[in-house]
Length: 199
Image 1: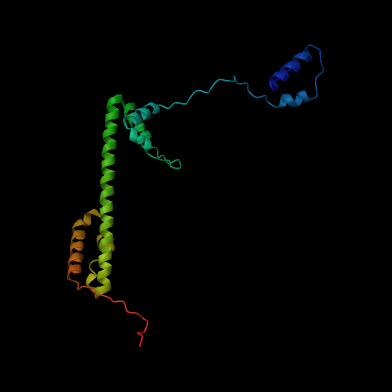
Image 2: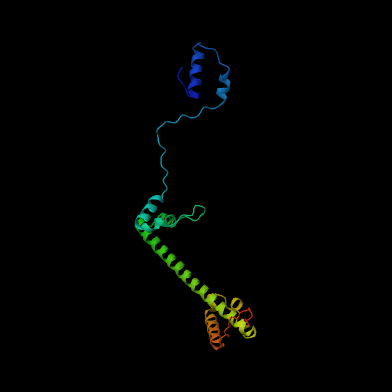
């Protein structure tokens, strides 16, 4: 007898039993209790899964080849720029805007967003560098002259890096610079040897 699948074997044995060729085998009850696997047609590939935004993502990468070099963080729930672009364009298209107009509007939104984030990044970098230099200058001033003249110039509490205090911040920086200019030059330390001179 040729090798058969479980479903085919049960069917074949039942056929033989009905024909009176064989008696019911003991293993048939156990085999009938276990559901036979569903038969699939071998060699047929599953259909590819396609999402509505896939075509827009491909078009985005075609228009912006450099975007394909953007790293995708697999552990993040934040979608890539191309996916965000496609999702936003689809939202606009669902509102009844044509495909081309939706793309142009999404492009302008993304350009504005990129410009705003770049501007904030540059300003934050400049402010951080200013604070480092200012803190070093104030620390040097305090080491030389003590804390009394600088009580009004508490950078962290009074001025911070907030936009509303920019004038005060600039004034404080100028005051610190003037104070540094008026300081006498620190004494030059000469290295002396601990070894006694030879007699």
